Length: 338
Image (cartoon, rainbow, N blue to C red; front, side):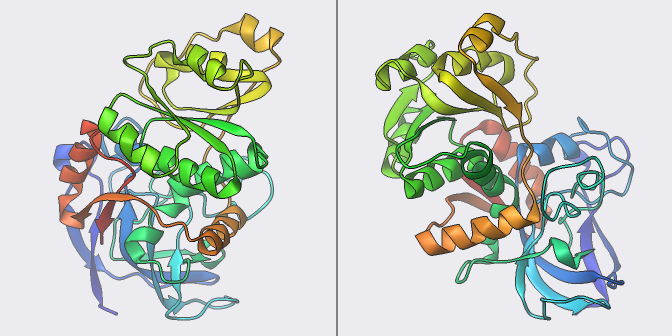
């Protein structure tokens, strides 16, 4: 373990072109904490909103809400973990299990507390989850946000069973994970994209039905056609004003539209009559807890699921990584080595 480390700390009035790496003393774990040598992080839209200044931060915040690495030191009274364990961090490090509350979701990695854009981080030991066996650090760094959001939406909140149908938006990390999980669960997956090439790749990953939302702008009605007029049991929604009405149309009677992603689009106009008369539940959801991440790790290991990684950057290329993210060219996750 080095006495000094590299860390990326945000300046005041942060923006993508002002990201810089500092050199500082390596921290030490306190009571109930672990020191983790971070090896990889991955990009989420939430991270972009932070580093670009749309979610204002105090000067000095370390961004990035995903992280994977190995434990190099433990504080007092830590049980169940050992030095050398390969672990993943948590988006909500204080939300260990149970329902979300104001106190247990107050700490958000890379936003309200320091995140994982550093060579070493100190975190609550209880927030760490052992990586799936045989996974690389780059692969494991994709699970805590996008992977867990997909898992919680389908398995925990959606409570979908074999034979159900889910509607998935786009080809980012969240949707690709949701597609992979859905197929392992025996769930029919309908996916959208504006790219024919991406739709072909999603088909290769197991998508049952493909919709190009540019050539089929009324894709909600098409989803109902594909399901014999019934609609999808669960529709994941990330587009805001640009897609919300279509998501409601695509949803079955008594089904659920789950708002799962941050968006810079204007707030949607709620098609209230359809929501009310078709008994549709509209819910918001942010990532998940540590116990759910542990269940996800067990599930992907048991089912042989591996994440789709589009490109990998070095930590000093974080600006370029976000610039690539904004092009929308990627399919799956963008990873940064720490």
